[in-house]
Picture 1 (cartoon, one colour):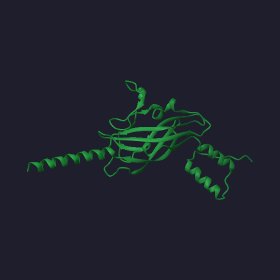
Picture 2 (tube, one colour):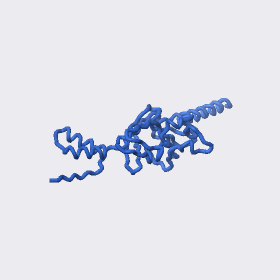
Picture 3 (cartoon, rainbow, N blue to C red):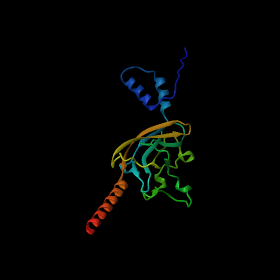
Amino acid sequence: MKRWTLITKVSSGEFLRMTQILASGIPLDDEVMEHLRASCRGLSVSQTGTLLENTIFDLEHGGTGYIVSIAIDNTSTKTVRIDQYRLEQPWPESGFHWLEDPRKMIPRENTYSFPQYGPEGLERECVLNHRLGRHGRLLPGDYIEGLLCGVGQACIPKEYYHRQRLSIRLSVFDGRGRETDLLIDIIVNREIQIWHQRRVEAFKTRNARASWAKV
């Protein structure tokens, strides 16, 4: 008798639960498991780099800089095109955007840079912002690694302190709209805020000394 198998797209988490069921001794059909494995193959995203390469930081004249370091593998047997990166901010933010490809700027540049404050310049080859569409085409087994750099208009809220650890969600979409999610551990850098506070305190101290000198 012919056997029909209905297979739907499952997440990697669902597949992991199925493998755990299998490991516990509960049998699952081998053909079903192989179809499920094939369904889960596609883009694999992982976090890389140091804390300095996974950070959120104040910009000198307002706003926030974002840097995350990731690696992307094409674990499928087909060519996959990266279509979009989406980063979930830990506070309300309506003006977030990824830094523009410096090759598209006028005048043309070769490095990514943040406005006013941040890395002086990041070589284009080290950044994945422009690796989209035809530039984000991955053959089976291909692997890319680098930084994603973005800017938000909202400032870091006061309740977030220097060197605080956070987790934020990054989503990578392929050309077919399939989404791969990753929770990224980041560190909050508030050096600019600390510097401004010290300047204000120093100014107040000088004014106080000047007032006492006049008495």
